[in-house]
Structure formats: structure tokens, C-alpha cells
Length: 296
Image 1 (cartoon, rainbow, N blue to C red):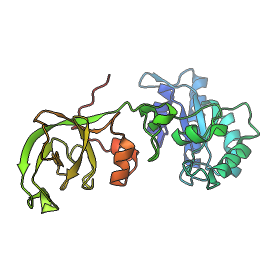
Image 2 (cartoon, rainbow, N blue to C red; image 1 turned 180 degrees about the vertical axis):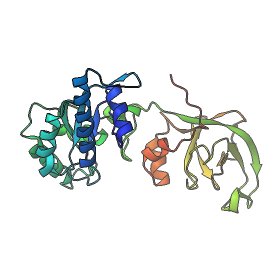
Image 3 (tube, rainbow, N blue to C red; image 1 turned 30 degrees about the horizontal axis):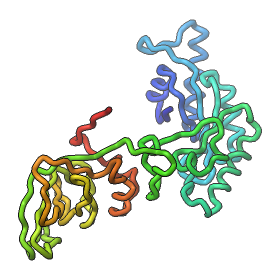
């Protein structure tokens, strides 16, 4: 499924037979304009551009039920539906919306969105509907309808701070690197840019090849855990572009080359997100091309 924003993108959508979301008059009018041209050229026996053939597509009409970001107003649904139904480049019409507060179970807003969505689509019971993404799938079973849209939960990651392992989900993503240095460090000595952390005692520090250049947040506070050899050790000092430092402890036996896990099965990303004060979505989407992705 995609959204077209101009004529070129619409023609690509038609040639590849993508499903498309319609959320505004500009899209509808462009689709109708191209459809008129298509009908005229059909009468001439052809409809090709650079050897590409164009096909009618499945359209998802987006309804603004309360997110107030994209979508037609509920009172506009019938107009859009009737115009789309008459359009020869539309094969089928479905309805889609999006929750804005699905994680706030007691606020009452999601119930209002569900009611608005059902009222706006009640005249079209034969058409598919979708409003639930990850949070809706987890918490609003009455709003699953014909289609759901799992996102972050496909990684086994919660859309919120609360882990979902108790619901049977398993994390499938691990972010890891390795120790590139293990150093003895004296009490009273700072580490890193700005000297923001000063060791209260003699210890060993581990330097890990991971930094904000890789997408690990620069604002990760001291104490954010990293998993090394089965134990959590805290980040100390500022995260640098290419490296960060952890306090291994004076008696540690860690060595250069040991794996350092930033999140995964035994150190949940939800815990890291809460430490840093962000959501898990930010952590996984900010990883840069410097990070090597391996799929198993």
C-alpha cells in the first residue's frame, strides 16, 4: 500500500497495481483526471506510456476519526465513496483510519474513534475496514475488523514502555557490538567529552564500538545498561560519535572482543527506551547505514 502525491507517482501506482490510500480532494481529482484520459485512450485501443500498462487499483479511503493528521472528514465519506465508485481506475474501495491514543486504555478517546469509524462506514458493510495497528491489535479486539496492521510488534517489541513478552511475543532484533578496549581507571578521574562522569573508585572501563554515528542516542544518560557476558553494566560519560564507555567493575574479567548487547532477548529495548526517555520506535528507526544488518 502506498500514497501518491503527484501524477508521476499515480502512474507508477497504476502500472504496478499498488493499493493506494486516498485522503484528500487533490488525490481524488488527480485520479479522476487520469481516469478521464484513460477512458479516452481506451476508446482508441491503447493506454500505454513507455510500454507500461495501467490497471485499476484497490483504494483505501482514509477517514479522520480523531487523529487529525490525514483523512477525509466523516461527513465527506459518502461524497468520496460515490466519486471513487464511478472512477474506472478504481477496482475496489476499503476504509482505513488510525488511532491516536490506543495505549491510553481509560481515556475514552479510542472508544469515540471506533464509534466515529463505524458510523462513517455503516452504509458500506460489504467493504473491508482497518483501524488497528500494533496498539489496537493488543488492546482493542473489537476494532480488528477485516484487516489489522501489525508494525513494531512484528519485531516482538512493545509500542509502549511495557514489554509484551508476557503476551507470547519474543524480541527478534539484537543490536550488538564488541569491546575494543579494557582500561584500568583510577578514582577521581573523568572520562569522555566534557568529563561529565568522574569515577568514585578504582575500576575498569570498557570502550565499545558504538556511538551516535551508528544511531545510538547521544543523550543516553549515565547508567543506561549494556549487557556484557550476561550482566548489565552502566554507560558512563557521554556517548561519542563512534564509541561509548561502560563501567565494567574493578574485578571484571571482560576482554577485548567480548560481545556487548545494547538490546535484545536478555536486555529488552523497552528498558533502554525508558532509560533514555524515548520510545522504542525511535531507537530502531534511527539506526544508520553504518550498522550491519544480518538476517537469520
